[in-house]
Length: 349
Image (cartoon, rainbow, N blue to C red; front, side, top):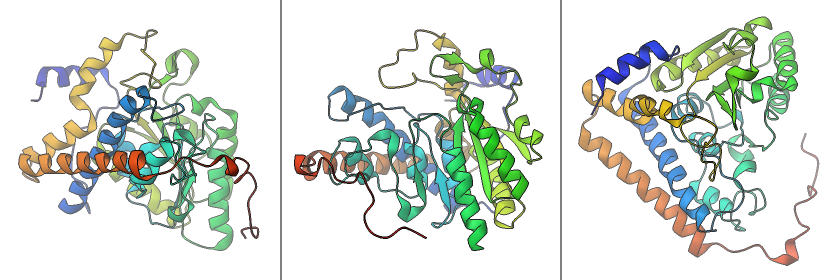
């Protein structure tokens, strides 16, 4: 049930808050598809932590919970041949690009059938068949290679677009400024997306960031830039539609700051002792799945029963992925310990 008083408080406190609306060109079918994708992301992430605690999932795990609207609103508009540069918090990016959650779960389990043969784990998943350039555990490191990807599209004369994600912590990496400058100078087909969840591990971004409107950094390089409500999938979709179209038409890069709030710890065992988590309580009133669901029902776009069925289907898919990874996949053989270190075959041209 919607807490109206809480939302009114947020409108004053959360400077990126924007009212929901259905953009031109976004039909009912696509809205429900996006709602479904967000639920798959949510259920996948909710399932991983207990698996990690049970020592079935290995390595670090950084939940994307309550940030689902960002990846969904942007990446679902891309073609299969378009590219995505991801982050350490990147499960949602892969799901939005059409990745196989069975293979992703197998990768988290460290199984041979995983995306990277069980060698990469949560922070290094890639799938070149769908343009997923790969996640990285190095903060901000995907941006320069993503500009290289956009340069490749420009050289080859294709209309392929690259979208690259980074956080408020990554925004302070020097390589991102260098990448934005080159992209602007050469009008490369890339969209820079800053997922500003306001915390870089245990550091409040306001303590280490001079200009706190991060989108203004893009303006400094002559890049069309804006900030959107990271909980509002409709505004994100509408803004990304323009940015992607600009890039595809050869008009150069755009910068979108998606402002949100990290509602959980940085990783699976982070209890957030360094921050007042009660601040997050009211933000659960506008988390993207709840907010979109209420909007769909209020505007008679979908019924509660339809939305419940979508959630149930997401649970079913994630449970199937766990069963696949746990019972049908195999541990890598020690005989393959040194495999996959160097590329085989011809150089990709």
